[in-house]
Image (cartoon, rainbow, N blue to C red; front, side, top):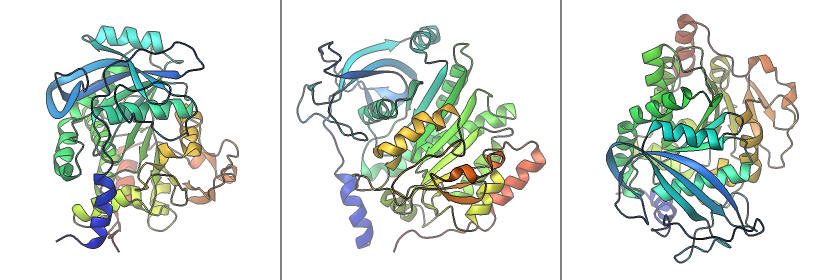
Length: 400
């Protein structure tokens, strides 16, 4: 029998469903005062649903598929939120709404789409987490792109999640099922001459998938493709010692790695319980040892969002629900800037662990820039990084 604390976590998780059938395109007034829009390319390993209202199901597809979408964003909304329709069809004046859907059948069509929608050659690949439907992931990425004002071309990689709280193990295996699909998508994108650099941003269980695909790429080639400059892991649902192995097996040099963590993340507390009370990377306190010095030696930047307050009941999507954080991602991390380039002032007590120094954001200019995101130069150094990350990272319970 589950403890009361776990039941308390399950309740908000089980109640986060949204209306199904929102993928049918709606007509919209072209007036810029009415709404704005986000164009994105979607790659998926999901099985087609056969219904225009949903497009793809939570089952596993036989091959990856591409779709281009346009999402209308309503005006007069709160940054960090997704306005789901209360009834169908959605009203673009008040709701997120799909205004265009087109299947893409060839890589060349995908390249033409990217060339037409290129923002200086910068690409963002977003991988969603556990308990997400196709439409959940589409609307979340549209919200992030719109609210962050990032100058990058958005590409969503959505894998077969059943979007059910009881399907944690199915989702984990679906992430494993999708490793090669994501690796192939990244390789295809990197091979596009219109693409100058790529940022990979993954949330929750999607961080596991991202790290596994990058690890595969590193094992095949000895290192990650040089166009993949940044990897951002938000609330990563990864066993800490497994992450240490993934990190070193990516090879060297590596992309600049940034992680967002929060010790009050209820979803990661549940994940810890379900996986044998093993600590999850996204729930560590990076200011404490042994994490602080190990992150420093690995060249990983950790941003602690524990003190950040959002409207989310699980504290699991602060990176997207906080106006300040989502804008930080779009305006600084997406462009390859470190947090030490200039003062960044926030009012919520956000701290960062950069080069081993714990600072409040707003005074991070004092952190030595040379220590941030340094790639490891040799296999010998890589082995040292693995030992640095994994030694003494003993399983810790997040449940009270």
